[in-house]
Image (cartoon, helix red, strand yellow):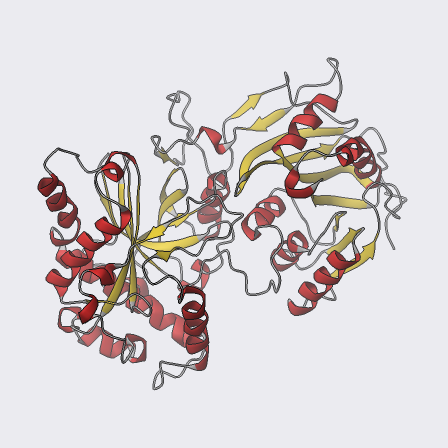
Length: 526
C-alpha cells in the first residue's frame, strides 16, 4: 500500500483552509455504513480521492468548516496525519520500537504543519460559536470538560474513545501517555484557543513547550501480540515529547493524537471535533443510533410536501433525522407505548420541530390512516427484548400488510430489521413465482484487507477483494433466490449494518403501481 499523508508541507499550513486548498481527512464509521458515508462526502463536501476500508473512509476536500460539521453518517472526523503500510514485525523488539517512533520523528515538519491547520480549524469554530477570544475558557468549554472529567474520573489508567454501545466501530483502547512521565504531567494552563488566528500564524508551534497532548491508540493483528495498545501509546508519546517538547496530559489535553495499527495499515490522525459527529445536539434522549437513522432516511427519496410515517417511532430518532434534513415535509409518528411517545414528544419539542412532526398512539398492525395516504414509511421494527425472536414476530406479515395498505403507489418503505427478522421475512415472502429483486451489495464484503477506491468512472472488471463505486450507483446483484417481494412491495436494495452486538439489515422497498394504486390518491390525509 502506498504511503498517504495529509496536507503537503509547507503549502498546506494554517492558511490552506482559508485559501480553499484541499486537506486530507478520514472518518470512522459503523460497520456497514461505509457506502452511505462515501456518497455523503462526495455529495455534501464535493470530496475527491475517496477510498474506504472497513470502518474508515478517506477523502480530500476543501469544504468549509461549517460543512464538515454536517456529516450525518460518520462517527468521528479526523485530519489525516499519515497512512502507511503496516509495520513490519520482527523478533527484534527494539527494531519494532524504532519503527513505531519513526511514525513521529521521520516527518516532524509535517506534524507541525498539520497541527497548525488543526488550530486554524478550531479558531473558526470559536468564531462560529461567538465565543470571546479574550476568555478561551468559556462556560460552554468548561461544561464540556467537566462532563468529560466526571465520566472518566474512575478511569485514570485508561482513556477510551467516546463510542455508543450501539455502534460497531471497534471499541477503542486509549493509551495513558501520562505513564511516561506522570510526575511531569502539567495541568493545562492558558489554552491555545485563546489566541487569535493572527497570533497562531505568527507563533511557531515549535516554541509551544507547554502544548499538551494525549494518545488514543488501537492495535490489532501481529503487532498486538508484541505490544499492548498502552505500550505503543507510550512509545509514540515519548517520541512526541522528545521531538516537540510537548507535555502529556490525560484529562485536559490541548490535542488528541489518534493511532490505529493493524496488519493492513497504520493510520495517524487528529480529531477535528472533541465530540463525535454522531452526537446530535438536537436529540435530547438517544434512541436508535443517529447514523443508522440518517442512513435510512437517505434511502427514502423524500420530497417536499410528502407525507412520511414512522409506525413504530419509539423516541422519534428517525423522524428527527428526516425532519432536520428535509424540513418541508409532513411527518407522522405512531407507537403503542405511552412512555415511548412521551420520550418522542420531549425530543421533538427540544429539537423545535413541533410544527413538523405529529404523534399518535396506534398499533403498527392497525393504523388509523386511509389507504394510500402515505408517500414514505420509515420504521425500526425491534420485536422482542434485545431483538430476540419472540411470538411477536408472528405479527410481521400483518405489519407488511398494513404498511402496504397505507402506502401510495410508487411509495417507498425503508425498514430496519434485526438479522433474525430479516431471515424470517425472507422465509415468509412470496413463493417461487415472485419477480426478481435487486439489492445493493452490502458492506459485509468490505474487508480491512480491501482498500476500495471510489472512481468517477465505472470499472467493468472488479477484483474479488475490491468493489468500485461511481458517485451515483454501486454494483448490484440479482439475489432473487432469497430476497423476494411482499405483495406489491418490491425489495429494491438492502444493507447489512451493525447495532453494536446486534447484526441488522436496512431494507428498501418500493410499492408497485398495482395493488392499492390510485393515480389521485383518494385517501390522502387532509
